[in-house]
Amino acid sequence: MERIALFPGSFDPITRGHESIIRRALPLFDKIIVAIGVNADKKSFFPSEQRKAWINELFADEPAVEVIEYEGLTVDVCRKHNANYILRGLRTSADFEFERMVGQINKKLDQDIETVYLLTMPEYTTLNSSVVREVYKHGGDISQFVPVTVKHRRVAPKE
Image 1: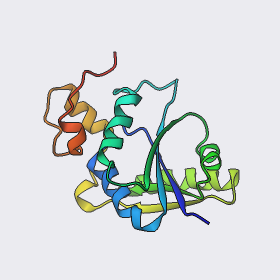
Image 2: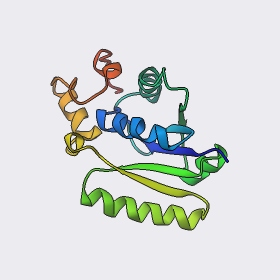
Image 3: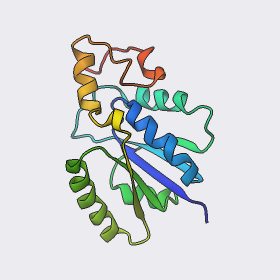
């Protein structure tokens, strides 16, 4: 059976921390589906099409990485794409508590799907998309926080 992992998130924008988790997980799985969650009730900063393009460009040389957009329950998307694993990164103990709760709920929703957690590399522990957006909104240089596919493609945020 193929080992397929779904890595869900907003990726608004993708950060070097996200990239690190994906690259470090590649040897563990046959395929990683980066799943951009689209929530109609939550306003995103960058258009989902732009986020998808950034991630596709970043992993253009990795045939094991696929990028999709999705709505609804993560476990339903896993079933649809035959993903047996949900991949998550952990930065802090607060992340652990939140991710543990979500992982346990997902396990109750589908016993066949395992959540796999990778610890964030120390240099990315303080990094998250919210902070990157704030720096960006106020004209700061985000190049040290995001992959090259993002920093050279500064676009106007969605209004």
